[in-house]
Image 1: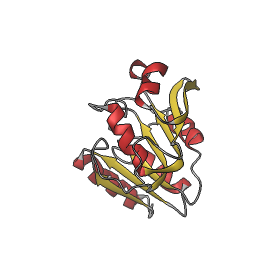
Image 2: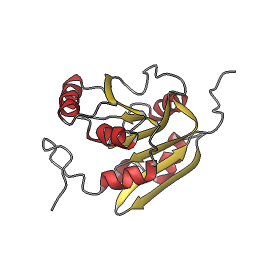
Image 3: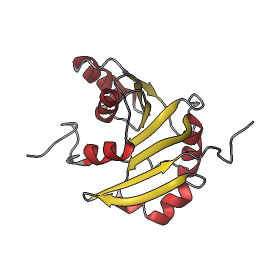
Length: 177
């Protein structure tokens, strides 16, 4: 049996969510940011795991987010919300999230390093980042360059899925006193 996250997608996500959320280690009170959430499947999983917290899905596609909102309401997930946002430049609340997750094209931004500096500002010091990345764009050396300044950066395969995990340092080079 194949698990499909969204029947409108021409590919499957079999095993991806389990690997991603094992790496993300979302806790019940966490605030989770899902980057490139599409129709919100990952956001809804994050919201269920953060049962006393909140999950926010962001994407640049308003039509996908409208679908995400409908699916979230239909599944009666009350602690998830969505925003049209470009993660590279969006003014996320500083230190507003405990965990950032992403599935797919998060390294495909025009300037991935700028995107991850912006996301670092949105993440609590010591917060966790967990991403699923296509192998063609996420070689370990490239990921380490993009995540310059992050701690405990790991790039590896788990169950055949390329995962990137990292922690936001207590202080980023861009932090202001």
